[in-house]
Structures are given as structure tokens and as C-alpha cells.
Amino acid sequence: MFLNISLRFLLCVGLLAVHGKPSHENNKELLVRNPRAPKQKKADCGSKLTGSNGTVTSPNYPGLYPTDVTCVWVISVKPSQVIELEFKSLDIEQSKKCKYDSLEILDGSTSKSPELGTFCGSTIPSLIRSSGNSLHITLTSDDADTGKGFQAVWRAVSNNIQCGGTFNDEDGSFQTPRYPKPYPANIECKWVITVPVTHSLTLTFDKFDVEESSKCKYDYVEIRDGAKDSSTLIG
Image (cartoon, rainbow, N blue to C red; front, top):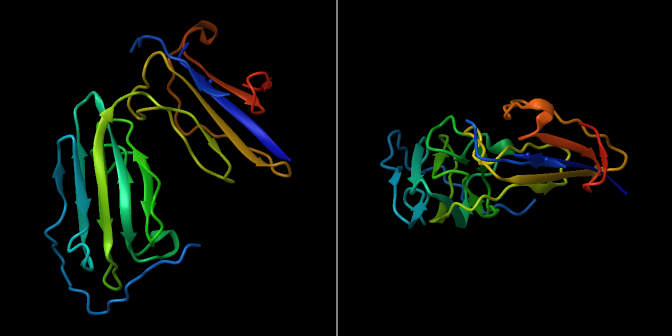
């Protein structure tokens, strides 16, 4: 048996659903041990990428990426589009919490944008989709082992709002579409969180900014104790 919590944010947001109206404003890791990997304090890597599609790879790919580098790529497409990033290969030094070498994907154009994922090892990430028209990609390596790096293809797609999801992990996080930018108008997003029946759930809001109205008449976040729209309303 499982304990279900559903959330709907309706923007007129909410089981957590969002309603909106026009805004008022352990796989095996293929790790190549390379004690003689080229030392390169300042790598010729990273770039700004534009257009409708393209490929991004680590330095020297499919050879070994250098040690001691920080490479940044920023992908930008038209304001009416979002970006889909699909990995074809990944081979980055594996470590706990990717503390040595890592590939970080951020949902935006700056280093302060929300994180979409940080990866290492050789497990190919699932398709990544931005909420806006830019992605920030950073490859970081330390002074020891390296690997073959990564290859990914990206494409610009129409910005049809997709939101909501199902979570089965013991902890995690989620956010409204386009966060920290204003969420779109006329949407309804539903998130369902499921944990073992022997567990309880605590939901904490780190940030909260939803249009204010009498009795939450227009935009609102609704939380129910269960996975159905008819489950007990708890907030």
C-alpha cells in the first residue's frame, strides 16, 4: 500500500494544481582512468549556441576531456520556443554526489538559474526540456581522472506548456512552469507524490508568489490528502 498526496496548482492553479487566467501581473560507470590526462587550466571550451538545433560535446570528444576545466555553454532560441536536450553519450568520472567531475544543466541563461540536473558516470539522462528559451550547461573537472565526456543534441520546439508530474522518491522538489519567472496564464498543473504507507509526507514551500484574490478566486494552489480530485482537501 502507498500513501498518496496530490497537489493541484490552478491559475483560476492545484491536487498540487495551478490554474491561471490572463495575468495581472547502480549502473556500471565506464570510467577511463587517465593519470596523464592533459593539464589545461584554461580550456578552449564552451560557447553561445543559437539556431533551431545543434550538437554540443565536451572538449576533445570522443577523446578524454581535460582536467582542471570549467566549460560553459549557453543555448538560446526564440522567445516563443523552449529547448529539448537529448544525450547520446555520457562518460564523466563517477563520484558520490558528482563531487569531482560533473555536468550541470540549469533552466535559464545564467549560473543562478534553477537546476534541472547534475550528472556524472555513464548513465544517459532522460530528455531534458527547458521551461524558457535558454539552457546553461557547465562541465567541471578536477585535477585527476577524466572520461570521454558527453555528446548531446538540442532542438528548439514550440512552447506548449507542460506541467505537473508523478513523484515516488522519498524526497525531491518541483516548481511552477517558468519559475522563477511568472507562471503562464490559463493553466492547470497537477503533481502527485506517493510514498510507502509506513511513511508520512511533509511539504515545504521555499518560495510562494501566487496572485492574491478574495478566497483565492482566480489563482490558487490546492493540496489534497490522496491522489484523486475527490481526496480530502487539506490546504
